[in-house]
Length: 482
Ligand code: NAD
Image 1 (cartoon, rainbow, N blue to C red):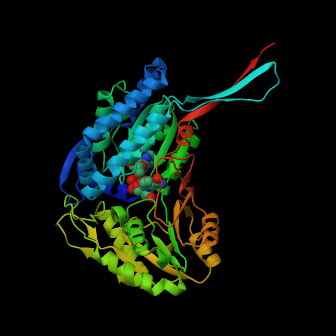
Image 2 (cartoon, protein in one colour):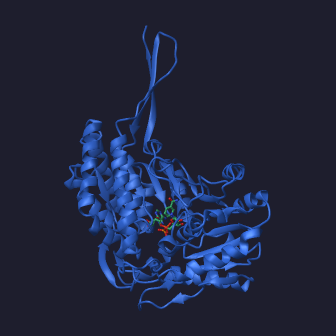
């Protein structure tokens, strides 16, 4: 059972037909939002299909779709404070993170896809002269996106940007904990002139609303971002129903590899490690949660990292000085603390943190934690913790570093810290992951494809021009000329 499912099971006893949106900062209730039932999902998808076929969105000139999406980006800019507040309150993320990073990133992604949408071309095949054969891409029709809670607006925009750009009608299912920014986004979309019903937000539980979308015969493509466990269910649902196209962006256990010369990066190195490990209290799919350090610099890195972790300000998300907010809920907090305790019982040393911090009653806050001296078979080295916990392991050679980096089932992201070109390229090529950064902790910008390998997912990149392929399908047309 994922954290969200366990929390929902607890809340269901209070209000079975409602999502109770709680502020992770203090557990207070922010909103009650009706769960979209499976039968309501079916009505929505049937209506969405009719709307798609009417051509009210899919049939208009790409420039008009671009203009509407650009207006949406402008409206998001106008209401950026509101959007940032919703995500900060619902997800417990520091408000500065939402205001300075997540919301601007979401706006930029809508603009980027809008600007790129009419710069896509089909292809003409090299056939005999009595034939014209070409390919073009068409929207699927009704598509769905199921979202996680940690980047509610940003994940929504990575999906609606390309999906709407190519002419689909899209249904978003936000995570139970974080529906408010996407519901607001749907209002802004209408205000921007995107016809009503082309973007629908159906809040609800995974078990009811999400599962209904995953099995719905009118939905022809689904893009899922969330845990690997739920990703498997989405894939199974597709396999056992209408074989809808599935794209999965799942969890991670991303390594940060520090070669012997890594300290030459100076403060940038420690800042990068801290950001990678503790951004969004480590509740980040690309969290650099495994630090792999060359023997010769191990002790100095542990020392500097531990001091930097201990200096981070843990506090309420609304405080602009806060760097580490609460974890999403009590279920997550208990799971993270249990994982730390199991690691310590197996021989790990806590170099920093390791405990719960008392900030506000009702919220669950965990000190940024650095674990060292772990036995090679420690469970925490392989499983995604999704909290402010980083492990440090040592290695003696480049090959050993590559082997350690690849010793997990995930393959989302990695960072390599060295100024030696040969080492950098050998590591970048040797590590199995969808994204490897050198000399940085980075997810790249909108021009860079983003997508995981292995248990971190498959099915096409988010971001970059490749994202359009995730939301459209190719048709070949053969014209016999004589
Ligand atoms: P989760 O899997 O618990 O939930 C994600 C979404 O799936 C929610 O909207 C939930 O309601 C829905 N869901 C649950 N059961 C379902 C079912 N049976 N059918 C259909 N939908 C269902 O994940 P979470 O706790 O919200 O998010 C955390 C996870 O997401 C982490 O593993 C994290 O690494 C991953 N994540 C990945 C990326 C990426 O881009 N790769 C980005 C952000 C988060």
